[in-house]
Each structure stands twice: as structure tokens, then as C-alpha cells.
Image (cartoon, rainbow, N blue to C red; front, side, top):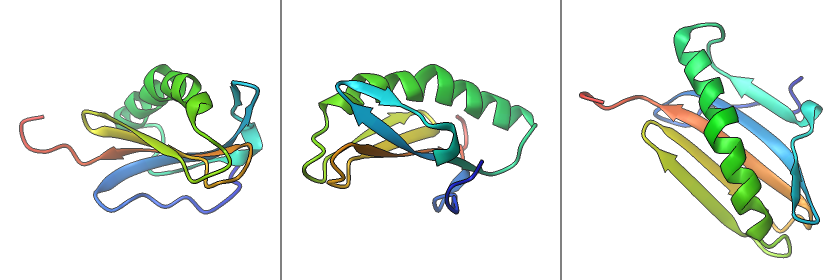
Amino acid sequence: MTWSVVTVPDGGVRCWECRAIQDGGQIDFVADRQGYAGSVGDEGYKAFAAWVYGRAKPWIRKDGPGLRGDREDEAELVDGKYRARISTNASYGYLYVRAWETVAAPGQ
């Protein structure tokens, strides 16, 4: 399933990355271009996966088509302890996606 080495950002707990295809205003998350790093099967994993599918992917589908593929364009979502970043890397059709969970600050 992994297409590259996924590394959790500093201060992170787990991370999902993919190279999605941007075509005609549509975003395609290709299964063999996705990877994950972090623990699997615990409650944190389940909550993170629910956030990726319920919040991050819809945001990517909404905001991704507005990014220009002919330059290095990017957008970021900050949602509590979760983060997502999308970038075109001037790739003319790909979106480079990284979503991760940060360590929650005390009281969160």
C-alpha cells in the first residue's frame, strides 16, 4: 500500500500522505499512492481515520481544485489537534497531501 516512506512531522503522533490526481476539478485519491505512519487499531487511530475521511478529504476535494498546478500553490487546514496540507509542487496535475495528528496541548 505504501508508495513512499511516510514520516510523522515533529510534534506529531501519526500521519497520512498521498499523491492525488487533480483533473478537471475532480480529485482522485489513488489507493496505491497513499501511505500511513503511526500506531494502528487504537482509539487514536480510529479518531484520526474518521477525521481524514470526514473532514480532511472533503476539504481537499473542495479547496484542491482551486490550486494552480503550474506553480507551487498550497493550502492548509488546522482543526484542533489535526492538520492537513495540500500542495501542487508545480506538478501540473498532482496534489501532494499530508494530514497528521499533533500531540494535544494540556487541557485540549
